[in-house]
Image 1 (tube, helix red, strand yellow):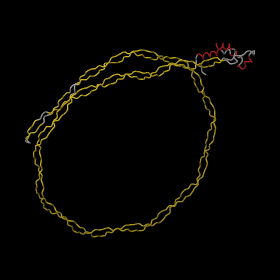
Image 2 (image 1 turned 45 degrees about the horizontal axis):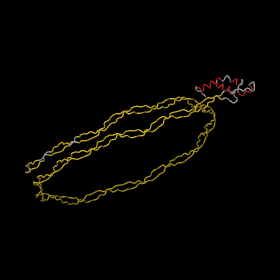
Image 3 (image 1 turned 180 degrees about the vertical axis):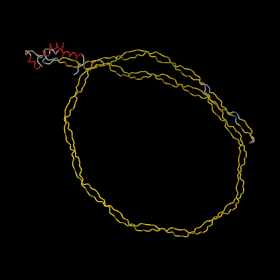
Image 4 (image 1 turned 90 degrees about the vertical axis):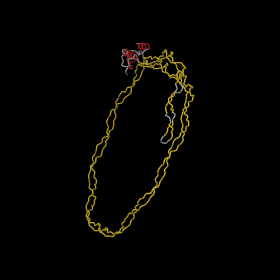
Length: 454
């Protein structure tokens, strides 16, 4: 086992080296403690065994700081807008219509007809028929047969067998054994020490000043000019003489656009006037501190060792063997055969035939005919007519309405906030301690204590 250069272990090594010179005296020159009784001069003398160093653990309490989460309340200001109603007055223009009569001349068209005669020539068609004879030739077909001989070759198949020798390979398997070495690993545990640095938190309270923004509401008066709008106004018309109709016609006057403005609106609103104040704020922060201690830990390492075992394996070799089999084969022989067949053939001859047909003949004759038609024509007459039209004009009136002005103010509310703080806690841990232990056949207690102290 490897030893680290720590103070308890180093003291144990120095004690072992110091007692090395006294080992031979304790054993009375013998090679081991078993021969001590025979080597000592007198039976009353007892040989002292070497001192053994034993590591034990002692429970030590220490204080550590652990983080703890707690919930506290915090005041937060929310900004809200509230509507403030205001009564205002505005002028609204209504459009009214007045009926006004005027006279117009309207043309009235009348459609009349007059009769007129005219002469047309109409063709008259007449169809007559005459008979005519003609001669045609019609083909007549006849089918005849003749016999014909032909020779064909017909194949004749015959199956025969022949003997054939062939060689096959048959596998032969054999099991053998060989020695195989395997490496295994054994786990060995060792105890080491490392230096661990722990961080603890210490609370520190500080006071600072924070600037906050507050203010007051002040009422102000504001005059808002009225809105502008456009109005279409028509000038008076006049009567104009129309030479085409020999009467007077009314011509309306031209239209123009006028820009008008509504009366102003007086509004009262509140204005927020901000100001700055200094407020003390107490803040607690945690300061980190480091502490160092020795902590034991166990190290595992793998130690290899070798074992031998027999592993079977299979060897295969091929053996040849001669076999025989019957292979069929087919032979073909051609045989001649005479056959008879009937071959059809066709003959054609022409037959004369007399036919009669009717040939139409059309004649045309022109006939005179008198017709009458109506021809339309239009007449125009001016008729006076009285009509009514609507003339628009604007009438003002006052309307009351309510407007809303939004006022901003701060409203406090409490919320829960989660924070973290360090709380001291006492924990127990095991600390290794090295002590000296002697066997039952050891020297008196005074000599053992003197050696352990040395």
